[in-house]
Image (cartoon, rainbow, N blue to C red):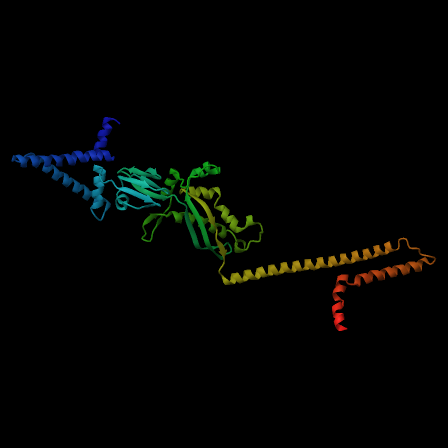
Length: 420
């Protein structure tokens, strides 16, 4: 660092060491000199001479300090003189520099001075948070997890970003389908977080340890400066909250699909393929490149979401749908019943044909090796009738197990002995 840079830092620098040197030269040395001169004058009885000049200097210094504090209070419209006075001491003399504690995306200490006026300040940032500072002309620095980051006096905290996974929901949403019927969507849930390009490259492999709170400076800038501006209840412009921005993108997916399809295609699809189900189609739209790039413009990535439940609350439409579904179900039942009756009749015919074939086969086998005698025709007729009668009797005779179960039980020998 050159001598001219050091001189410049001494007069207008915002580093604490430069402010402490100014405090030493402009305040401590004059006060010490005045005190020493007054002490020597009282001790020796000499008249006061230099003390008037030093006293005048100190009075001028106090007047300049009071004017500076009043000027700072007038600019930032603070309620008391304490924040402007402390800001002047911290920025010009490098003493009483506030130490800002940032945790879970919020400032936990020194909120008034840092939020209203700005640096200088030391930033203690816990894991899960990031801080974007800016000057009057644009963004300055992005600070992540760490202790005692120095924020100079020409910077202020623009955004405190929560790097943890965020959760959101859309409890109730009403969309008009293409046929003019309103569809109610309930219980839509999602979670999201700050975008980091390492998810596309570095974290593809399972072996690479994942940073629990990743972020990129570009994503922080997009989060802070690319969100839309809306009017609040007081008709004052304000930046759209992060949750509302993500919620609006998801509502756009659901509303776009429902408005392009009929009610029957939304809540009662006829396709059996799960990939063609409306919920699956809507869910997949959130992970297309166009939608992902739209969220990346505000520094966000959507991790997971549930499209919710679709239904229609119009009782007339519900009754009509129940009627249509009942007709469809009854027609399916009748078709299945007719198919079952046809199969039953076919099986009966098949069983009858098999029985006739077995009968003829048994008769043929029974004639093998039989001596027909002189009257062959009569003998053959008698054999066929006899074999047919045997087969019919065998078919009509119940199984042996059933006969045993139906026959009366014989008394035991003990019972017979008692009877005798």
